Image (cartoon, rainbow over all chains, first blue to last red; front, side, top):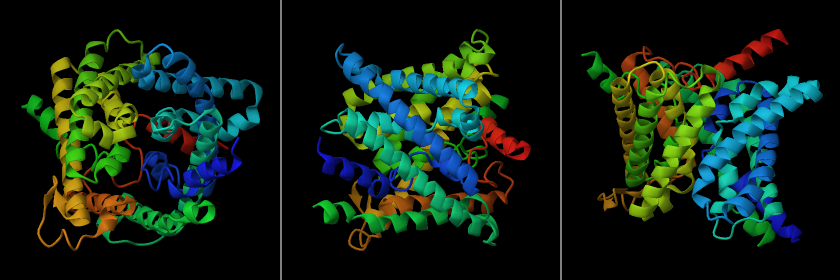
Length: 200
Length: 224
């Protein structure tokens, strides 16, 4: 296994192709749940968890079931159902066996079913010209989740300041939040050459 | 008259993107070029029309407890059909929209209208609502994509705009431009409606089907 390649996949998923700030996936929780650090962390950890689980389940389904039987067109339906079922299962298992974790993450789980970042990462593993193998897919999922975590945590800090400011009346609430997100997104442009320069 | 209101509500008063703040992800992602925006708008409208009609037809059959999974399956079915049609007849659009085409499944506008409208209203009203909402979504995408494409790359539907083509503000076609233009458009709508438009006063997922769960987050916070 080429370790260097895995590091490149991880770094580019976290910093360069950040799901929230560069690819606009998972904007709803990014805007909705980032009001304070505690919620932002809880939500992001739940997302990382579900992304990893969903990739671990959907990758074998796609490769061994759908592709083998020429059913590639069922990808969207199968993936969304698997993710929905998985989230439900995780919720039930956590509730029964690990109540402490359920208290911490349980409330965020229903939100994740319709989170486009989770469905996005499972599909994105296969839409490349050379699809990722299993380990690369898992690393990509981890990186995307960590990227989401990074964006959420940084943005919850920014929002603390924005909420207490007084923008012009029409900009109050969502508009000023979006404009702060734009500035954060500009900041992430700074990572553009990281991969080429570190590993090039 | 009421029928007409169902049709026109989605375009201005309850504009899904700017007032209800649904479907932000595709709005930001595909609005870099006007042609992509129109393609996305039409695809989403077609899916919304199909899902609204069928959910309205099945509203007395689907048990209340499992309605959300049922809606998701129905919507995913329509998205797959849309995906295949676009792939067959508009391959360049299929390439341009990429991952955002299958992601119509999790577009909150579609699930949101199923939950807020189609499961309470008749077939004709639901179809009109779908057309209105779809038109609102498409128009908003078109306006936003036009601003971004004209400023960002100096073109509109691929046609060159004099002067701007040599002096473009390329950040507008990149991620930050999307956030800025979207923020300004919502602020403009707030200014015009003087804050009477519902939903946009607070950030996030008010109209979204998962808003109930969001509320649960807040409640849990209090009880912990």
